[in-house]
Image 1 (cartoon, rainbow, N blue to C red):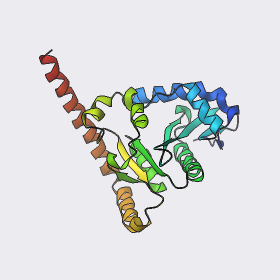
Image 2: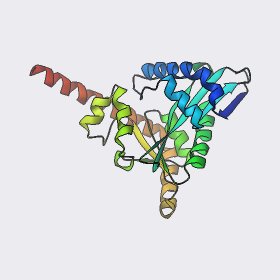
Image 3: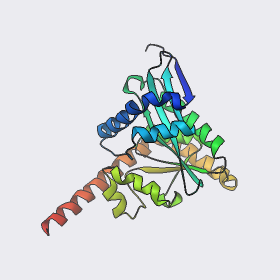
Image 4: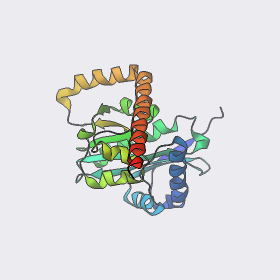
Length: 227
């Protein structure tokens, strides 16, 4: 594989020229995976650049390669690293991990007392999160900010989320709590166990996806009978 040099930076207004290609690739990636993400407009991405709440990766030639941004919820009590995306051309270079590391550092700098959480269906992202200190949690451990959950409305699995009263869905919830020192050893043990069993966990996630989608189809079919 050819060696490529990347610049991984805190995004600023000069990077707004990339906002449309970023949102287009977010949509394309979600479609290819068969899952949904909260849709974001170029204007929204540009706001994150203005606020210094995003990380962007570029090649040495100035070609866009990756992106991720920060969202704060519950008056800053919770923070999410959202919209992680890498250009298909650069997905074999470990760039997602580097971007996640940098957005995590930026989140800790801007929100040192906030819990950092994420929702994902990807085993690779789960593994990266685990390396950063996240642990798998239930949905009840996440923010109850309605604005956050409204972002799921554009996801194709939103019906499943609401049918489960926002307590479960195809995504796996993960959380980093900077103040959980009393549980530090237990968390460390759980993280190590999670790392060892990441392949098994990935199989469990795929099984959960299969079961939930099958239940949802059954529900829809039953509903249509009475229409």
